[in-house]
Amino acid sequence: MKTLFLPLDERPCNADFPRMLANTNQQLTLLMPESKILAHKRKAADFEGIKAYLLEHCQEADNAVISLDMLLYGGLIPSRLHHLDIVELENRLDVISMLKIHNPQLKIYAFQCIMRCPQYNSSEEEPDYYEDYGYALFRKSYLEDKEVRDTLTKQEQDELHSIHIPQEYEKDYESRRHTNVQMNAKTLELLEKHMIDFLVIPQDDSSPYGYTAMDQKKILAQVKEKHLEYRCMVYPGADEVGMSLLTRAYNTFYNRQLSIYPLYASILGPTIIPRYEDRPMYESLKSHIQVTGAKMAHSIEDADAILAINCPGKYMQESFDDVKDITYTSYRNLMSFALMIDDFIKKGYKVGLCDSAYSNGGDIDLITYLDYFDILDKLYAYAGWNTNCNTLGTVLSQMQLAEDIPLNNNIYRYIEDVFYQADVRKYVVEHDLKELGLSYYDFKDQQDVVEERISHYLLEHYNRLKLSQHYPIQQLKVSMPWKRMFEIGMKVTMK
Image (cartoon, rainbow, N blue to C red; front, side):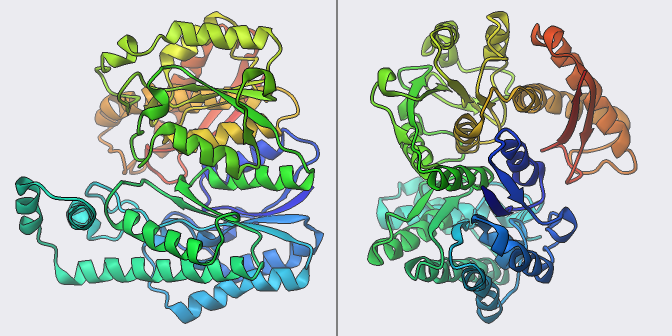
């Protein structure tokens, strides 16, 4: 199967991870534009270059997975910064119809984000004024939406009345959101006309109230009005959606549907609402299984694979928090969870591990247990990065597409998700950057030094695992694609 693939942006999670996923299945070939024509952080992608690539290669492809944020706006961050008008955006959207004209048999799986509204002040990935008014923009919309759909306390009413945002900033922000929602509606028209075969509208960093929730409500109403519920899904996520749709494309092409049985680490796990998301873990699980073309198994006996979900006991924290909430031990028996995984693997079950106990990093304690039981090289998938839904979609895709245990991919994720996100990132920020006079977003002329130190620390962590004795690493080289500490790229060479 050949898939024409247009990623959400050029970061490793969106461009490299799908390639790594495809490399675990000999029946799958990705056709993807070169990185030089894709977006680079705040710089929009080369639209004409992307258009030319898609039209040139669509006739040799069986299907296409298309990020409409990349096609329309030039990438994820440019979708939050652009000043494009509707006419220009409609012309860009016409590329989808052109693909169908060039190859009427091409199945198109598209995704288009609902623009996020972060709950903090930072212009790193938002307009410049978000540095000073980001939280105010979020909070005002949150309280206004809650006032309409629920009620506000006296304290919340006073807070709402005290929020002051310069009119030009609010106008700019709301105008862009309005434009993007209009383009969501135009995309639904293409879905209705079968120019798009399946559509996902993911929410990035969602909240129960506010701009994102209000936009979601508008979009869901249009989906229902057009009776598109069977071919359009709206749920929390973003960076994993390309992989989820690639898996759906594969399952549809080969006419298969796997049954997935979920195994949670705690009794309250399915009901916990993760950080950065707006619904319980179990509800997101339903969406993520469905979008890949799989189905939920109602018993272990009926399952083709087991999805082990490491979840909090009661409340979710960041992986790098110094003090862990007591419910991580009182409401969760992690050793029992590790032993259950071991038991299922010994019984011959195919097991993938969704490590969602924390946001922004994996669970070091769990990895330690699994290493002790010699399980780390027996999993069909592992992830534990960023949000619960990022992790969930990654694992579900890998465990369905991998023909054999994807050991190299798993080792990559143990190193990045667990060692970097949950430990080394914070250590380097608090020690090395301070020593070098650098900051989280500014490496000055010493990026090479930072990358070398991180590479050294990560290799040290890996070499402490028993796993490393059987699968030693020859070289580990880290890169910082967006010149900041949040994410890394890695090249791992095994001996």
